[in-house]
Image (cartoon, rainbow, N blue to C red; front, side):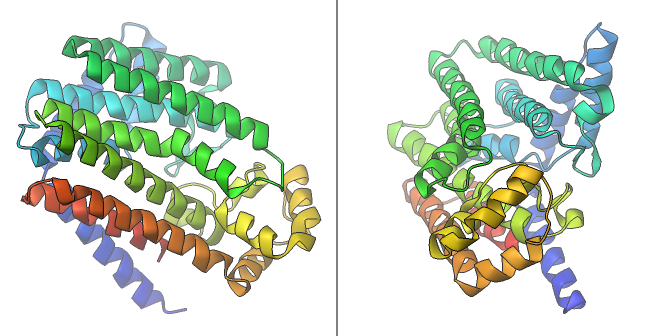
Length: 339
């Protein structure tokens, strides 16, 4: 293994991300302040868990998309209402993570104990609910029906995605269509909402708003495809959470869907891993090798690349600027996460 080459590649990606995020660095600092303000409560446990969540960090990709989209259409993302709504998008994302970790019995999140493992399932459920309600309470200040329509729709879709995924857990016959349906509801529609709301707040016209909505949808799809690939092929340190757990939790992701389509005889072994919640005779390394040999990994990567290309094409409607250039750079950065 070429460790120095891998380290250099990671550093290059970090520099690329830093350049993109530097375009809205001061605005993201305002988002952090707003996150802290919105998470305040005279209920001690809420305030404590809110501080814990904020300190857990994250890349703040979704708020950055909202800010960049507002700037890309000629708006001013430093305005208080744009900062508030960018924070709302992070609240919604954080709420989904809290609830996801409960459903998945996840022990860690971003290299720290998850909320459910640290504070218990009951507190985690209620905190996730509190985050959702706080997000909607803040969004009401905007007095914008289009924004509220988007937030209501995306919250419903994310919940539907979780419920759909529950019906598919432990099944080795999940289709590509079912996989993408869950993926879009759980991840891609929130990306799309971030970009479209940023466009609305920036004063975008119908074409610009549609372009950024489509950009976010394609970007979010590529993001989750790569995330699923990394869970299948990567290691804990890179992910900031346990690797290889999707299958242990009964989730069949795209590389395995393609693998089982090519090698249906492997279905019983995969089913056994999902049923037992542990790798036995069929190891994760063995599955990765098999997926590589039949071209399943390459096919999944090409699928992600096609969504990256679609995201970039969607920005043709957006006038050139350093902010639209930043948006164009994000898909390639996401794709390179697989390296």
